[in-house]
Length: 185
Image (cartoon, rainbow, N blue to C red; front, side, top):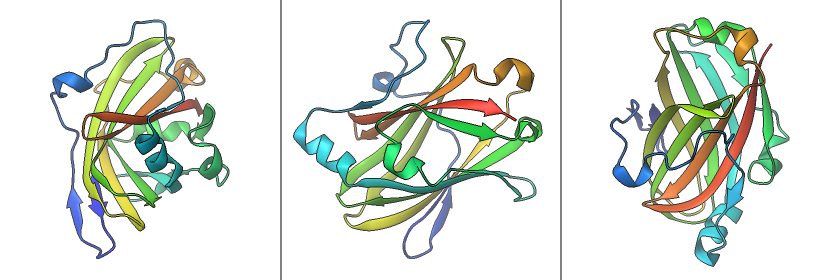
């Protein structure tokens, strides 16, 4: 993906494979993911100071915005399962560019995400993204490019049956998890 800091510098990040051993899936099949915030006071402070300002997904080939996060996500991101109503046409894109704008009150030494995609209770994909250092009291732009699978299941089958659990890490410390159920409209 791409990371654009306050100075406007941009780097392209691709999905990182293989996953580091400590970040590989340890969940049993049959789960759909969960919303979670670490009880460690230092980790909870980082998450309390973290705000998802906006997120969008674009057709990476054309740059056309296909989906944008609703404003109410900002306050509910780490408290409940959210819903994303995404146009089914996004499944036809060869690559999707996801842009995230976030603010952090706290320093994060090595910010990373592990996303687990569940379909009917089974992990079907895992994606690992590394942002790096996040300055305290900063607003950051992060763009990632996700390549489509060679074969996609139909939107009718996926809609409402896919959840994406995003694990937020500082180095190897799990700070929090968010959960989004995806509907293809």
